[in-house]
Image (tube, rainbow, N blue to C red; front, side, top):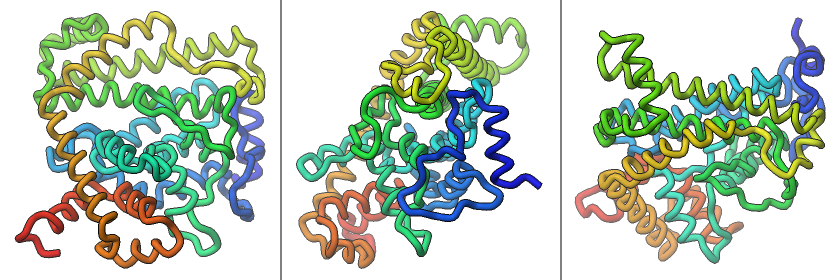
Length: 384
């Protein structure tokens, strides 16, 4: 029988000395008896999957708003892809794959509807009222806003998963300082793996969606050295397959190349800097998990291409600006007259300020729910 104690023993036998061990978690905000058959991080993962906030990710924007098409990534499919990439990296480095999976599944729980434009709008509206960013909101979701358990608010996740949420860092995500968590040094290697897996996922899968949408002509990509090298190799190996399959296979190969480079370079850095424990990871002044120099150089033009040709494409910018206005108009409408909030949210005004209540309500909306609310306020023919 595989009990929690056996799982914990296996971790000590299999995982690297610098990997997080569930038996040595720093614990939860509210004391709980441990589960007989699940480790602390397995339990965290399950709680995240069963949460309302996780289900809502299905109808939150990655790049394309939900009604633009059924085959584009949503925040949920992106999250699952990040988790898969992160687990592959963690397993190869002998890190705790269950902690990595839990962090990956939770890393976007605080995201607003309409992707980064929704976040930008709320951040501006909440300036002077406590601010807003999706990392802090994600921590608020798992600590306070989820209402599932009778004994405590939130999901009562372990310190290590909560740290992964608040310290999530990519070129699009800048963590804010949070007092309960160490501000100096580096986060755990498990957190670092999820951060880079997120970059790999959104770079390559946004590219895939951009091609599928027609906003990025496949031929234009051949000006990028990394794409051209891989695409030419695919064409040579599979000359008779369709261009669509060639492009899809190229993207899969790019992911594999980046993951392989990341694993090899990180292992090299662990040896070079003689990392042998978690305290050594935390004291290290820079991120240990990173690409090799050559891959870093090769990735740059591809990322710049995405910014110039997808994120700044006029159709994507129009969607973003429109979404920004939706959020702004909804926010101002609720703030000007909070009695328009549904009764469940209105009740919260007794113990929290109206700006935070409205912010929590809007941040938790899916794209389609936000659009429906907008219509109820501003379409004279829509029933309220």
